[in-house]
Amino acid sequence: MTTLTTSPLAPLLERLFDQADAVTSPAFSGISRDERERLMRSKTEYLDLYGRLKDLWLPVSRETGALLYMLARSSRAKTVVEFGTSFGISTLHLAAALRDNGGGRVITTEFESSKVAKAREHFDASGLGDLIEIRAGDALQTLSVDLPPSIDLLLLDGAKSLYLDILDLLEPHLAPGAMIVADNADYCPDYLQRVRAPGSGYLSVPFADDVELSMRLG
Image 1 (cartoon, rainbow, N blue to C red):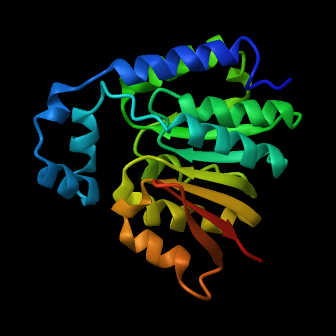
Image 2 (cartoon, rainbow, N blue to C red):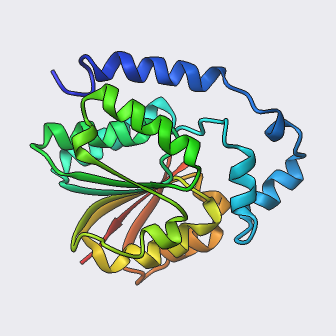
C-alpha cells in the first residue's frame, strides 16, 4: 500500500484527472496551430500565453504522474523542485513519494494566481500540504532565491521556452544522480541540445512521446 494508491490521494487524483480531461478553453482553441507553436517557443510572450490558458489544467499524463512517483520513490528523494504547478496534479505525485520516503519538501512555482489558489485547495485535501511549498510568481524570480543546497529531482513543466534558463538557475544545486524530467521538451530545442551533448554533465534520453528524462552526472 502506498500514499499514491490509497485514500485520500487516489480518489482525489482520479477526480482531478477527470476534471482536467473535461475542461476546454475558447482562448486556446482560437489560436491557430502555427501561432500556438510560435508562442510556445517564445521567451518574451510566455506570460501572455499562459495567462490566456489559465483555465486549462495542462497536467502531466497519468503515466508521467506514475513515473514521477516511481523516480522520486526509488531514488529516496528528499528535496524536489517543480517548475509549473498548474492545478497541482504532478505536485501531488511527487509529494506522495516524499511521504513514502519518510518526508521531505517539494518546492513548486506557478505564476497564475488563480491556479495557485486551486492548487492549495488540492494540497490541503490530499493531506500532503505539509510537504509542499508553493511559490507564486515568475519562476525566473521565485527559483532564483532560497534554494536548498541539494536537489534530488527536478520537474520542468512550465513555459517550455524557459527550460534551459531554469536549468541554469538550478544546476549548481542538483545532486549527483539527480533526475530531471522535462515534459514536452521538444518545444525547447536549446534545452535538448544542452542535456544531450557529450560532456554536458548529463545522461539524457527521450522517454515515451513527450518526456525527456535526464540524470545529472558527477
